[in-house]
Length: 429
Image (cartoon, rainbow, N blue to C red; front, side, top):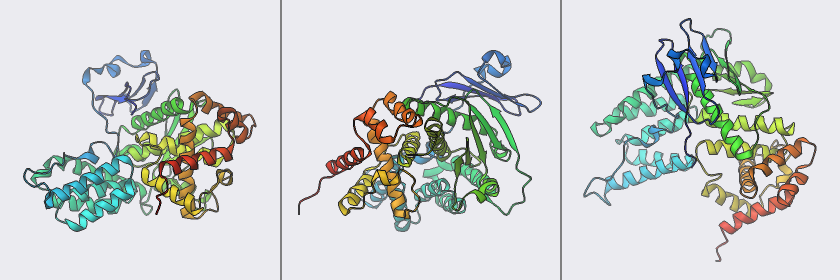
């Protein structure tokens, strides 16, 4: 796991109270403050910052990294003395297993376990807490609120320490529901612009109402993405990248005519994405994903090969949550598809994933990220950057891969399948 590297973001909110926020960027410090007239200023030149706004003496605060910070862990769950093997012990073992699945990104398995726990022990509170977090992450705010209400009804003295977090989550869910409610009358869409050395950020003006530190948090996420992509793929945008963030209802009103299916973002020279009212870990992951697409397109001049484009973006998204490229259960599912003859050749999904069934599309995304991870394991950062630059120069993906790895698309396809089969050999009957 990459250890955090610190660089301060400084902010004087409308009340002119200073907060110094830790960031992960290794670039120059970025200072952000709001002056007495309510004007936002952003600079990477400390000499341009008024002394009152760059004095860290006011103290530091730990900024929540979103959904999966302290909320996922809650208070430590331990088996009471003398109850090992009993009902309470069984309950806690299942609950701890679900939490570990969440930390590994196995959300489907975690959700199934939590619902089983909820059915078997309906009077216990903890499962409702984690189900509320999961539904919030999926954008199911009404369901998340219902789970949270049940948690608050059942939480006793043992969970008193979760009380403040529950109240905060309740307020944030209210803010999120407001942004996605298409029935509310809204003023015309307006944007607030914030510029830094690396980004041009346009924010739906509604996004800053609930969270005064919204812009600072998003810029930190973007700098994280820039640093990670630079470190892993070896490329950076040649010019500051434009990013436009919308509340969900505003995004749909502005862009639903563009697509025949529901989207949460797209790239047209700028990144356009929907955003929650309070930037969360899922928002950070989405920005990693879309930032990688933007860099891929700038380097290659297009979106193809689609499997490499999506594989790299998904790989970076998972890295944003400190997850492996794929989970064991995902690789087992690919092993099953190989055995059944349902593996989709990478060459077939180079143009796009269109026309695939939902099941095949999910498999295509997973094959892509496993292939991208295989490339990462067998190349240097410079070689990976060279693959993309070669595509941009007009070389085919086969030529670019052969130069970097000594194999073409079909060879890579076979090598990835072979690695999965070797990890899960067939069991003789």
